[in-house]
Structure formats: structure tokens, C-alpha cells
Length: 65
Image (cartoon, rainbow, N blue to C red):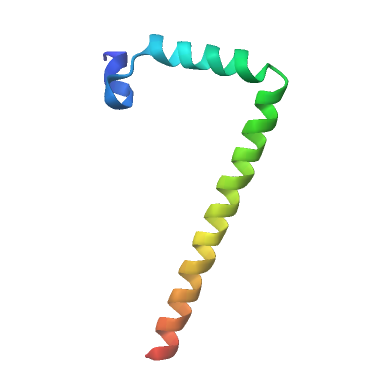
């Protein structure tokens, strides 16, 4: 399988490596894990909020029946 088909918009492996290199140079090796940790917490919080909203909608629908 061609690697360019795996990425959105025809972005190949070379472009991904270039972007990763720029990010590494810009933020440094020590800051990247902290950024990923914060990103993970944000995604987890978003998922919890979505689950809570879905549960509230289901509860509201059951009360209306």
C-alpha cells in the first residue's frame, strides 16, 4: 500500500517527518511530552462531557415518555 494514501490530502511520509522535525526544533524535546499530556487531558475531558450530555438527553427523553 502506498504511504501517501494513508494521509489526508496526499500528505506523504516526507512531509510528516518535516513537520515533526519543525515541531521538535520549535518546542524542544522536553516540552513535547507536556504538550501531549495536556492534549490527552483535553480529549478525555471532551469525551466525558459528550458522554454526560448524551446521558442527560436520554434521561430527558425517558421522562417525557
